[in-house]
Amino acid sequence: MDITITKAESLKTKPEADRLGFGTLFTDHMFNMDYDPDRGWHSPRIEPYGPIAMEPSTMVLHYGQGVFEGLKAYRTAGGGIQLFRPQENLKRLNNSCRMLCIPEFDEGFLLQALKKLLQIEKEWVPNAPETSLYIRPTIVAMDPYLGVRASHTYRFFIILSPVGAYYPEGFNPVKIQVTRKHVRAVRGGVGEAKTLGNYAASLLAGDKAHQAGYTQVLWLDGVELKYVEEVGSMNIFFVIGDELVTPALNGSILPGITRDSVLALGRKWGLTVSERLISIDEVVTAHASGQLKEIFGSGTAAVISPVGELNYDGRSFAIGGNQVGPLAQKFYNAITEIQYGAADDAMGWVETV
Ligand SMILES: *Cc1c(COP(=O)(O)O)cnc(C)c1O
Image (cartoon, rainbow, N blue to C red; front, side):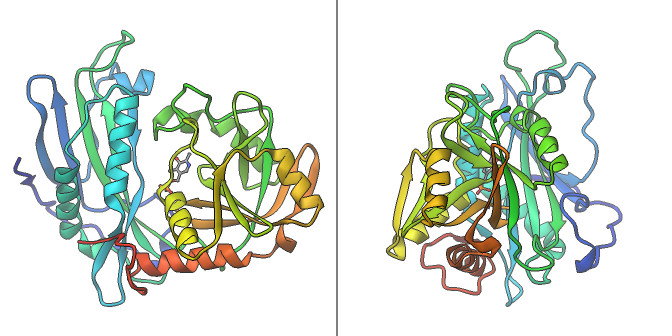
């Protein structure tokens, strides 16, 4: 398939590095591609960033049949542009498609299309420390129809947004609150998919945590409300004694690429790494005995998010003296150095654009 390219007539002014937030500014061009049962995925094109025309009856607006991804393009010191494990994002997007009855796409073709879009938008990849160009591939159901069934037609689009440093004031531990009133996902549900409804369903619990003075919600499993699953929209890690523990993937946890990278680096460094069930009671007991050294979240946006305080059942626990733990710092440094090309890519995770 050939990608048709239509250039924007006028280009936007690029923002100063210190004016970049998250997800508010979009570049000049986007990628679009459509699906219908006769032609399959067709008409791939790069064109000016702009609205998608849709009828009010468009299925995604009613039933949430849509999936997305989040990854970043990084500017290296030498001026190059690179991606971090993008094949994993495309593979996960196809997994999400399968779970939402959306037709799969050709991952190799999409990687080429993304690179083409990034080449056209290369000036938008900021070069200030810890800034990047956030990439949001999305697929939505397009049938104008109100019956409940899988759509027959879809739009695949990729938009790009320059983002600032996640930690402009330095790496700071966050406060998290365990919720037992809400769950993010349940066994047999779609917790494993990056699908629209999961995020809508997490908002109320997030709001309540914010009102109580916490940054993120720590989610327990949806069956017994006993085992830890995720924190906010990140995966979660614990350092207990000399063991690095993260909940095993069970169908309701999103399989994070940062999570996988932390596990791979931890194993390479010779740490004791476990993917297993970890109950909130075990976390509290480990805190009481002094064995709980660190808690941190992992995800593309923050890379690593150290947790300084955990609130559970009305009680607050300081984690690691409310300081950034040594492993959180080590993983953050190692992963960001690979992403920005400052360290050798011994794991083969980098894809140059
Ligand atoms: C995207 C996401 C993550 C993190 O995945 P990464 O690939 O590491 O960015 C974790 N949990 C949820 C719920 C997510 O949506």
